[in-house]
Length: 603
Image (cartoon, rainbow, N blue to C red; front, side):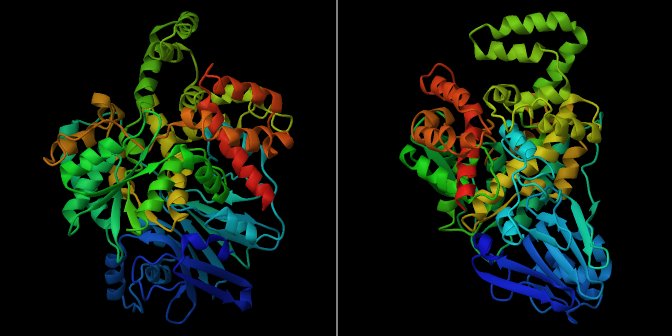
């Protein structure tokens, strides 16, 4: 199991065994804190408690001092050692003291009890399978499968959800009988009571409907919290850099980081030799303006097919976020110079960055004032017009539930478009859609009052951990690079939740972050356009990835196993190749799913 994820920790390996309880656990280590003394697993003085940790505990230094005052002694400076001593004092409640990104396992030898936990937003993954005679857990599904007595079968409902969403939502994984531990959740299992018990230990506060402060009044507090978060994520005994897209989120992080580190800050971005979405020029301009030691890497079209095939084949479960290949490319290049990179993930979900949130509010307002019959007629008329922006107004006018509207807007309507492509093994599974049912359940559980707040809470529960952070973790850890996210500091997240959506969404969204930028002279004139590591999907699918469409999609396991209908898929691919339509948003998850499935069948 440890060998299956050597990329997550190429520097060291440790194995713990309790023969009396038939329990064992292993850790692969990427050395970042206490390079010489941070071997895992870590045990307490009498060896009654052992722990392994994936990730970083950012407040471990202050916790260490507090524990020393309570009489604990330490044999190393590693953050993992804090866990065993916190457990001695607080048991499973230790999670409330932690600030960090982590998945950890603690074995209590006396009680023969296992505690697993995952960080508040799900920056680090953790999977488990509950069998009749054992519990198996791991940071990646590839490692977990290596510890199972037999290979698990694919879950058709989860596979159908993947083709709609482009990722696997919630606790469900691509394999039957295998679960993902939710963010901000701990798991208990013991030899005396061999069944899984889950406990949620934190959740985002409900967003208020009113608050007197405006964005400028909130900016000072937000700036202080963001600076504290960035500072904590720069602590390392190895070189640290910043992923820079040139937009607001990463520019804020980079500018603060430059104030906190000695010497020139290393920043990295990725560009392309085709299409119109490359942001290398904007990132370079920002870096030059701020005096960073900047490096950009170009992902050439001639390399895309080989890189994507290799990357998708290395994933433990498929992820069709197009930015995955871009992030992996820049991470691979950055790894030659740094071991840790800081990014801007989470800012959009916490501070209202997606235009979809504002359009949700507008659609709700129209529904309150326009009869449904008139809205449907207007929507049909607008969709016939050739202009994309006008056609989008048709989507706004179309009556729909909040769940349906959010799902279809976020996925380019794949829930509807995929139906025509499905083969016998998936046909009908999108009609009773697990993806839609999950969205409805999450929206109901969060209970936010307005559409924008509800959509943000949904993204924080699903899209952020299951897509954005999963993509970031796999893209970077596959090249043994650790990525850290200041915007997901607990204090900063709870600060954002105390701000009404109307304030966050003002002036194009992320109004508080924009005010913070205005208060920083070095970046007050820098780009404030939303940017991310986007990719030229349409051009790649018509060019370097065309053979992959033929070999792995139309001619591969996806159709031969009857997940998709070969003839229907052929018609869609041909229409895209001939330029009759742009089906890139529909075909990208199909390509990724086909590549991943073929690799799975080869293993």
